[in-house]
Image 1 (spheres, rainbow, N blue to C red):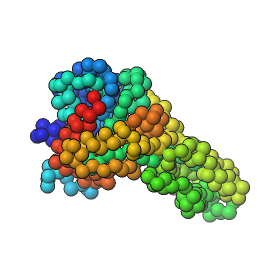
Image 2: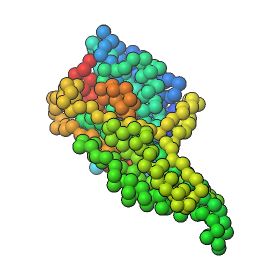
Image 3: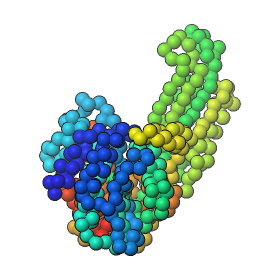
Image 4: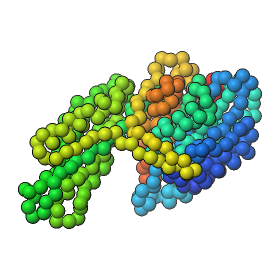
Length: 389
């Protein structure tokens, strides 16, 4: 298993921020070609796709993960340099170890062994770009434009501590824009301070809207929190007449865009009626992201929640296969969002998740992965895949 550990370290030592995955994609493509897969290529978005064809082609099983990672943040908070992939205390330290290069390496080495055997069904490795910025968009492109058929099962490699994940809350990004009236800072009574209004709506949403959000027995409570605030003009003896707030809203199964935006719009309308601002809007954020290939994608930041029933045969078979590999895996749900927002949330493709990392370490300084869990993950992906193809 030394080779898979070396692979994890090599992946971590190649920085691959969202939109900057080119070098990593080329490394993975070349490695998979050396592993003897039937077909390996990079699509127009920059995703890496590897195929191991079976005799009957069906079922089609997808092992899926993302190549991008978030910024390391303040390097002074790291015990070891974030791209060093330092081995210490039986762990590999570095940005992306948990989220999710250890999983990519484990999937790659599982596919290497699968490629050497005769299989009934087909395995597709799908390693995508831009998951951290727009989950679901790249795998959507692969399913609809590259595979051109729905898989029978998608296995996501996001961190689960080798447990079996069956869903998570959804995510929406909401932008509130407030328009006030500028005035000299020495005479604030002559204007409408948009920043003061922003503070008021943040407080109202955190204290009022948040308390009324729905609860799901398996996914937990929906939530909302402020992640950005900006105002202009700034740094002048002048009241800001424009303010922009960004909210992160986590949704549960059954909530739609209207459910998410309506209570925030109502709070904005209250500010207008109170004459705290002249006008205001609240909308789901829409943006354009650029892939390393130059291809651009338009993204609407509403990603639905999903949950596959625990009792389904496909879930129970997956759990049995993990137990047969000697793993004491249990069923649970993620706290964060994944590419399952498309596969299961939008397309109802059976989707589960299993990865070697601890999700609590994702995006944290000193992110690290236990070496023994990487090795177990290779066996787990092998066992899972064999159970279905």
